[in-house]
Length: 240
Figure (tube, rainbow, N blue to C red):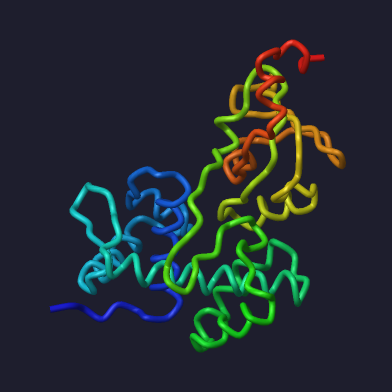
């Protein structure tokens, strides 16, 4: 018999977090990883996971990874769709900064009817991506496949041209840091591993030159522009 897990914001946040971790990193979702993403203690996450298991939305065995069931995936993708549309509304219409999008989208998500995001979507001419560059699922549950890479995989000892494609869910202070430096989808930059550490990157854009620490690197996804293939073949040309 299925349980009665919270159908308000908590349930939506958990399903969205599990979906996002799977979508972005393609690695098994653990209780520890889920707790880190939600900024909760593992004990409280375990309790909510048990409720979602009882509801038939996720599968989880002790000490093993968490995964969405077909029913859970269907509900999660609808939650993700509504949340990303609400972020577009808050950013494009209300002009809220990045640091306020996630919290306010969640608040609207928990209190609005299913028709509210649909009307927003129509008024915005059916956006395909949210302000962070994340693809918005279609009403039927289809979603654009991701072909970009975590920024950390693109950082090398030589300077490399990269285009930012997406910004992952991250703490408010990280989003604020990236927003203030215009490190957002579409920004072209040159990156190189910093001499101060293997997980630190020197970044140059048209508007900013500085250092990205691991938290900032971890929040960004990117791809190589077409001209990067030739430049990477001759790294010495970019090291000056």
